[in-house]
Length: 362
Ligand SMILES: *Cc1c(COP(=O)(O)O)cnc(C)c1O
Image (tube, rainbow, N blue to C red; front, side, top):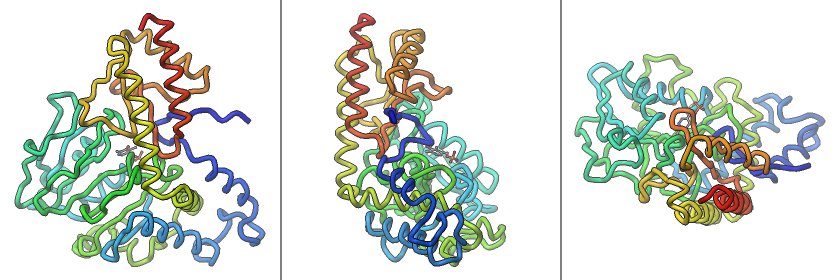
């Protein structure tokens, strides 16, 4: 078996021990004579997995009792609509920080339910940075403030939680959730599609303050109310059991690896290695993102020509370095170095980059 170095943006790499555990448990879990996929979501075996996933998450991030931890479906894209559906309405307004492709889609959905106010935008700089503190203008009447903590396509990330003047902060953390320890209490609601840092596609993690959930609208379909999932421990209807099982495996792996602090150290090291390689040859590699907004998860850069970028991706693929083509909206190169990507994977990439640059006059 030859596992590649996988730099896919999402669905993305999963830790090898997570997959090996799933392989060991695939045909039969805990002596029950069947796989977890074949168990009822109301049965003991599945409930054990489900509750363990939630408990692990609470433990790893120190999530307080004032928060619900929920599993929902429909992807982060559905949350773009479900957040304003629950918390906006006629006469209500929410503030959005516009930092790229995903924040735009979130705003487009919110406009269907209320007023969207752009509290800051870095569009004039082609989203090559996140807003500075002094550019963020929070409306005293905002129902909530929405941010995208890591901009997966543009390769930017907040390195400080913006000051939102006490308004409920809603965060799309799909591409940097659990990249290191963080203070959940700064947020009113967090959502994250699992397929970047947490598991496979098919499930979204929501961490939401109980008072906010309670204050949500009741005149929308039950299936879109957070309180429905909260009241039923995310077992209101059939959840994506196998996806949640894999999220459990990922969280157990995070814990065994030394917890979010250790994961964070590896991530800092990976990002440091990769940006150092890019910065070492400024005439060959060009990193468009402002240094203080650089993402530790999605590293984007350009080469002198598109032909060289195509050659880079092609030759990298041959060398077992997969998924390096930039998003079709922005072009160039993108290496997604999520939690499951190892320091060794990044060293492989850096070695390849140095050789490629040397071969091509860099
Ligand atoms: C991937 C991603 C999404 C979209 O996730 P889906 O599960 O495809 O809906 C939304 N926001 C961010 C920041 C992402 O990285």
